[in-house]
Length: 217
Image 1 (cartoon, rainbow, N blue to C red):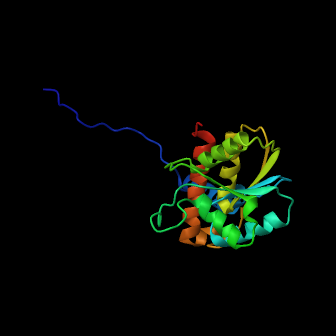
Image 2: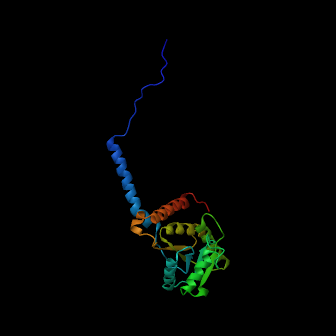
Image 3: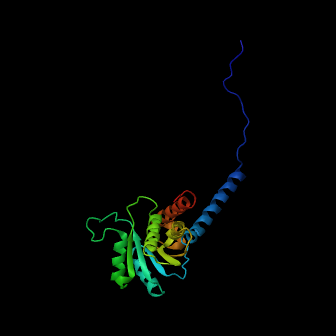
């Protein structure tokens, strides 16, 4: 009686030691390139000669303070502050959203109250930067401001995505610049050495990839 065979020999190829070393070397070089180049890429700093300064309201106080210096040192017509409702302290704070909270902070820092307009954004759970850009665009159109250029004041590695989404919202009809304030929670040139730096930069990198290739207005 013929025996039933359940197993058979099969020839296969496996990577050699040299191949594994080459793969490790390639991965290492990609990591080094990513480590050194990703923050300058995400934290692009491209201000233009603009008529309006848009300040993202969620910025920390130290960035808002330097936004005042930016406003005072250039011939801006006024400042627009943006922001969604507060996620914490809403029921305790006199100001219910980041737009008005940052407006009052700028006033305390010496900016003329008549030169600041708060533009709150509805309470959205995603694409908040885009929603803020849409709100700014709608306000400018509603108030018939024939603006040719704006600068958006933001923070560090968030800036490239901010620039991308503002251009989407304005459909490239005006010139948009961006000012990226340094994030003092970590150093730009060694962001990977702190947990805050890793969370911030990797998070903004993933968010930029989403905005660039998967986001549909």
